[in-house]
Image 1 (tube, rainbow over the protein chains, first blue to last red):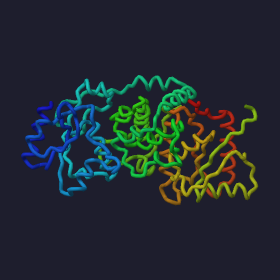
Image 2 (cartoon, rainbow over the protein chains, first blue to last red):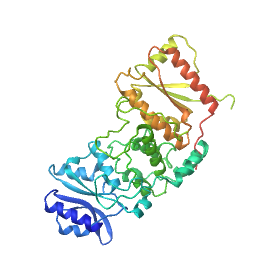
Image 3 (cartoon, chains in turn green, brown):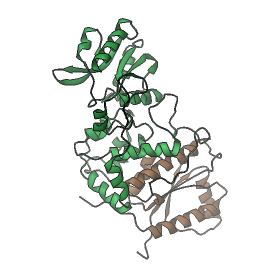
Image 4 (tube, rainbow over the protein chains, first blue to last red):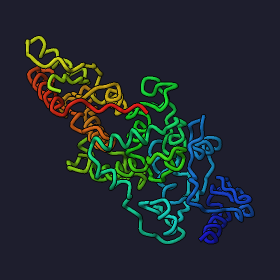
Length: 277
Length: 138
């Protein structure tokens, strides 16, 4: 699969379809995003489900690809994308964070093992060029457990979980779709400076509700969390709710505007009982 | 618990609901004094973080009031409120706050009686639900 990806990337460079390939480079066992300019460099190209290609650079609060695009307005980049990477690119393009016209997506499917590891619901990109689709994992043991609890127990559960928070902002910083320059999580009004652990329904939940319509399901927030707070529980539940309420799934197409931003005429709200209680 | 008086926060849009609340006052309608009205320019201004902040600051219930669909001063502001609150209701349910503690209603400038009725009903409901659980200090 890796060979096929390299081959394809090489042919894109040869045919001048793209000016450079953006992907992961394996250097001495360490992975990092890298812009491959020449065909020789592609020998180090790597694919991993452990590293997302699409990151928001702090403190510029700009996506790495949009920074490159801003620097060179003519640059055409081929991006080696897994499912979640592609969804992130689409969500960012929807919000004018980058120009998808100048990006060519080299979609790579994840293997069944990788999908299981990430508990990914859609482990393949839309523009699939390498590999075969494998089935996604819809369930999450934690979700069933959380939904079995009553309101009081849920609150206690989150008090306990969020009590571990050290307010490192890792969940936000790792998120590919958190690009706001004016983050509500940094405003004194909503999150008090110097208070640890942060007020319970606020800190993480501000972010979780803000990304409800753009979460790509990559799970980076939970991976980044040093206190192991199960944040993907909520992102997964909200993804289901978006599907149920608006029949919408983030990151499928640039033309699917977020239902939250559309009028009720353009995208009506379905009334479902759901498991919210 | 019998004489529990809930603290409620009511976000009222400037053009309809706040005027509706005003009308309830000038018409000398009786409604429970539990609601603290916060005037916002549009119900679409009420972000999810504002509702969460109200809950975190000790509100037992949050009422979001706006113009009827189609009457919004900013044309589509309340369309977004409706969708946003639907998602937010789901989320506070997972978090452990009863979704019934958040309520969205449309109250026009002429509906002073409806304002009084909504506040009365909501206060009664929250009284039945009891105080919102407070986070245990860790």
